[in-house]
Picture 1 (cartoon, rainbow, N blue to C red):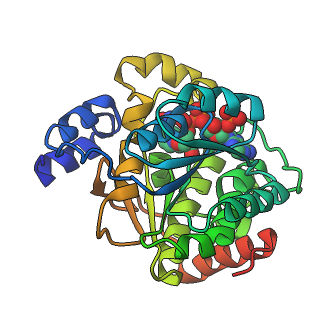
Picture 2 (picture 1 turned 45 degrees about the vertical axis):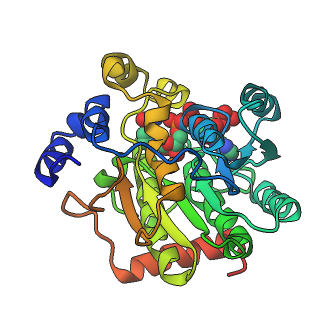
Length: 311
Ligand SMILES: NC(=O)c1ccc[n+]([C@@H]2O[C@H](COP(=O)([O-])OP(=O)(O)OC[C@H]3O[C@@H](n4cnc5c(N)ncnc54)[C@H](OP(=O)(O)O)[C@@H]3O)[C@@H](O)[C@H]2O)c1
C-alpha cells in the first residue's frame, strides 16, 4: 500500500487523486483478487446501462455474482444484458429512479424474484442542465440522486437483511466536497439554479444519508464512495469541455467501478464511511459544508415524507 502521506498528497492535488494517475499509483500495491469473491451473491446495480454501472456489472459477473441490472430504458438495458451474456447470469429489471412508482415496482420485482439481496449499488445519477421536475413534481436532481435511491434502499431493507452479509453502496462524487446539504431548500427552489451545484448538494446528501442509514441498520453495512474522474457517456454529456480537456487523464469505467466492486465483497469494513480507491476518505475538506444534527434529521424526515417509504 502507498504511504498515507503520498495518498493524501495525491488527494490534495485533486488532479493526482481523481485522475488515472492516482488509480495507477494506488492500485500497484493492491493484492490480486480472489478468483470469484462474489460467487453465490446477488448484486443489484442501478444505472447499469452505461458508464461506471455497466463496468461494475461486468466485473461483478466476472467475480461470480448474479447481477440485477436496474435500468430505465429497456432497449439500452437489453443491449447491455446481451453484451454480458456468457460472462454470468444477468437479469434486467426496469427502474426509473426519478419515479417513485417505478422504484416501488422495481423493489417489488426484486423481492419477488429473490429471497435475499446481498448488495445494492445505488449508482444511477444525473447532472441536470436546468431546473426540471420529475413526474412526481420533485426537482429532478434531488428526485433521481437522492429520493429514488432512498426509497429503493428502504424498500429493499428486508431483502438485504435476509442476506448473511447485506450491504448498500452509494455512488457519490468528489464534487460533494464543495457543498453542504441545504436542508431548508433541498429542491433548489431559491436562488439561481445551477445543475452542478444541485448535483453537488445531492451527492453530499447521499453521504449524509449513508451515515444516517448506517446508524439505523444493524446487520447491513452502508458505504458511500466516489469513483474519481471517469470517462463515461455521462461526463461527456454533462461536462463536455472538462471531458475533452482532461480525457487522457480520466479513468476508465472499470477503474471508476473498482472501489464499488471491492466494497461489495471486502470483509469487516466499518459501516457509514466514505471511500475512494479502497481507502476511507474524509467527508469534509472545506469550511462551511458541515451540517447541524437538526439539518441531518430534516433531510431524513423530508426523504421519508416525500417518498412515503415505510421505515
Ligand atoms: N464519471 C465521473 O467522472 C463521475 C464522477 C463522480 C461521480 N460519478 C457518479 O457515478 C455514477 C455513474 O455515472 P457515470 O459517469 O457512469 O454516468 P452515465 O454514463 O451517464 O451513467 C449514468 C447511469 O444512470 C442512469 N440514470 C440516469 N437517470 C436515471 C433515472 N432517472 N433512472 C434510472 N437510471 C438513471 C443512466 O441511464 P441511461 O443509460 O438510461 O441514461 C445511466 O445508466 C453517477 O452517480 C455519477 O454521479 C461519476
